[in-house]
Image (tube, rainbow, N blue to C red):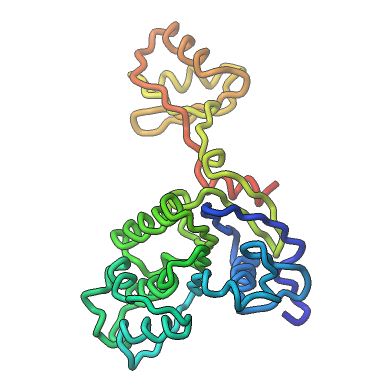
Length: 286
């Protein structure tokens, strides 16, 4: 964009039937990447290949297999939800029943209401309905959960995950809502100033960290004081009803044996599960 390079040297392969989330701060290049995939902007250099075809040269032949939800979906406010989707279906040159898409996003009961009466969340759901209208093989979603209430978000997550697991739809999306990312994504790709910093499987990102454990013990304060003097303990802090221990040169078994030998009664030792926030902080600060 003029002198601003939004995305640079991004090399990323997305497999059929997986959901990948682009993560990063505002201005990281996520939206530009999604719009380049969707064909709404053209890359200055480089190539986008979708379904094995050059998206720039053969976009017309693949456009019907792509569903796209921009960050702020736009509709004709003077038309109803059903009329907006009927128009989208005609533009896609497909003879489809729009009520199925409306039903999937929970808007069938307001299908004949004009869009100008819709809330932000309802507009977002209508945008999702339009994206899935043609039952595409690839879904490109920019902040798909913006404005949705928790119950609706849960339903949309279930729907999108079923597309991946059952219909083998590929989903490329961005989101700042990390819990939703953890639920939907198979992989996460972290962008910063238009460059790819890391790309990992979500199950490895969210693995348990056995070096940091929560210990439920009968005397938390005394146990914390005793552990703080041990050279194999990096850090210990007392929380309500438990202590949190960061091990340096020891195993969880060694921790358990030590506390029991000191006469403490252990009620539980729980390894800490890494979070997506932990992963982002580590990647962006490395």
